[in-house]
Length: 130
Image 1 (cartoon, rainbow, N blue to C red):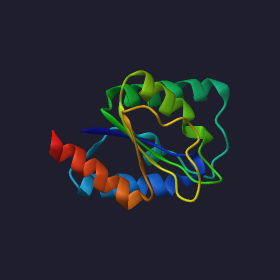
Image 2 (cartoon, helix red, strand yellow):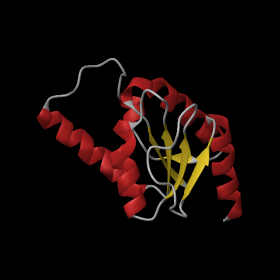
Image 3 (cartoon, rainbow, N blue to C red):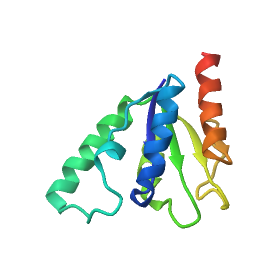
Image 4 (cartoon, rainbow, N blue to C red):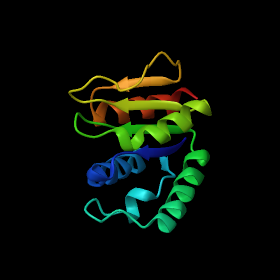
């Protein structure tokens, strides 16, 4: 399994913690943005943003699974990754604590978990099922 973590920048710390837990569970994390991005940093200039997007899409296309860490206040920043991954037929685990899923989850490749811990359990289960 190669995991991409999608998460709003305001929750970068959460993405880092999830990456650490996933690695400890034997999951290879291919997304890099959460290791180099500070959640309070200003938006990059357009020229830099294009390079960031290119790196993120490279990582996403290398992934076999995506986890989207969402909340009531944040989530829209993950929609591009979710859409691209759905388009490519990736398996998704989506955390939606305290809110309703923002998209139609009729896709058979989508699973919804109530917490980060439950999502990690589901990812480990998917790894063992292969």
